[in-house]
Length: 273
Image 1 (cartoon, helix red, strand yellow):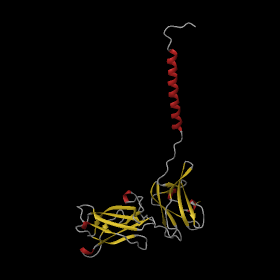
Image 2 (cartoon, helix red, strand yellow; image 1 turned 180 degrees about the horizontal axis):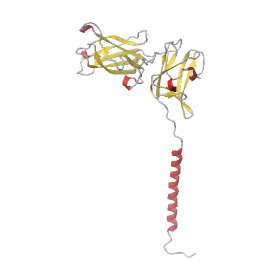
Image 3 (cartoon, helix red, strand yellow; image 1 turned 90 degrees about the vertical axis):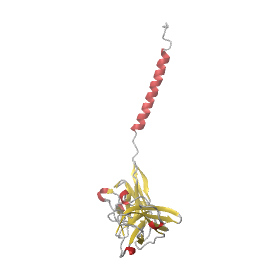
Image 4 (spheres, rainbow, N blue to C red; image 1 turned 45 degrees about the vertical axis):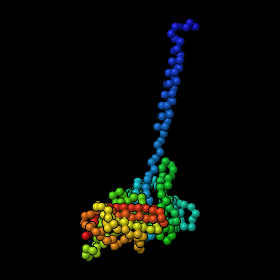
């Protein structure tokens, strides 16, 4: 074959261009494969606590996070005397509008006494554990429901995932001092816990504004529990210089031995002085 002058490097250039083209095509095909695949479903984030209904039945309350639609969750219950967890979603009351919304409770009306409860989310053909709420099993002695009637926990109510919540004064209520005479007026603060391993609760109240002074804060250590399972401090004295309209900060701290296991705070306005 006759060789033409100037054509010696054509095959090398063509080969390099083919290799580059094949590389780009491979990258494109890999990208299409990954991007066209089904994306994993998002798992809901929901805080669920155990409480008791007025009849003493187990109630699970959606305490915050994402609402759950019927069919998107399962509730497994271990009954006293049984060995395994069983899907007993059908033994719980149906949520309003088929959506288990924040602040709403589902009540168990099935057989036996529950000892353990697990709530799962159904996603992508599988299940993920959302919560295993603790409660006092046996004879309906469950942890008290932390959701007060008419109050939906959330950022505006001071609600969060802490196992202790301030219940009095309420989220939109003032810090009211009552009594006769300027020196005999007292206010009340109360809190509730969702855990049974709380060994101590402390309350702190102090004036939000103004310089630090020992006389401008009050503390109650080892707050006692009343018959309704509320931690109550009902004789909080008026701090010196405190007036109507002032802001005070309230803090409730829960301990298990020397370990702090929960803390909740709120700022409210003083009245009644």
